[in-house]
Amino acid sequence: MTPDDGPTQPGGDTLRDHLARALHDVDPTLSERLTHDADAHLELVALARAARSETDVLLAAAVQSARSAGCTWEQVGSVLGMTRQAAQQRYGQPDASATAATTGGGSRPQLILRPLTAFNEMSVLARASRYGWHSVAYGPLFHIVERDDRQWEHTRTHGSVPSGDGWMPVGSGWAWWSYWARPTDAPALDGDPSATELVRG
Image (cartoon, rainbow, N blue to C red):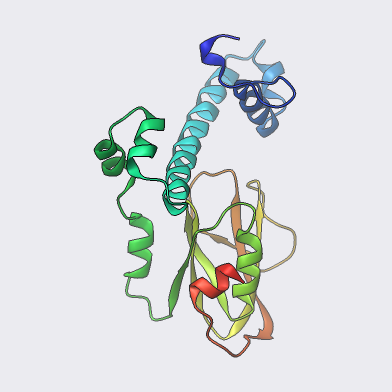
């Protein structure tokens, strides 16, 4: 294995192997088309660029996760190969989308649910939706939810529109997941749990 291959994962695969498979899964026809279609190479460039953007988001989320777990900026900087000050300056700023969404002058109440992961976010959204909260924006480790008097449903897909009527896209931008929400006919439950209570369950 060369230094550029990345760490070996369980089963002997490198991180590069896993990333290559992930890119292949996005468009299984691409590998074959690369042998005879010049435009396929441009598609690969676009796909790799999108993947780099997503790994940048993942890195920011990982830093936030490390900080929420109690790791110091000095520890984070050491892993990133930069000084504590550089790491804090680059990754320690408040999330602009969260600030904009909560100060946008909307008439409905909003909460920021955090920290979330790919493993718990759908169960947290399901819990919140019973009280009338539905996602209107998201970012690394958080969803911004808005409240009305109905219960909601949430789902996530790999970019495709979910089956059924009434689904509305949440947020915008390229990501591994696309999020969707739709209202139901059921009235929201009584009660006013805090963001912390909704996340912790």
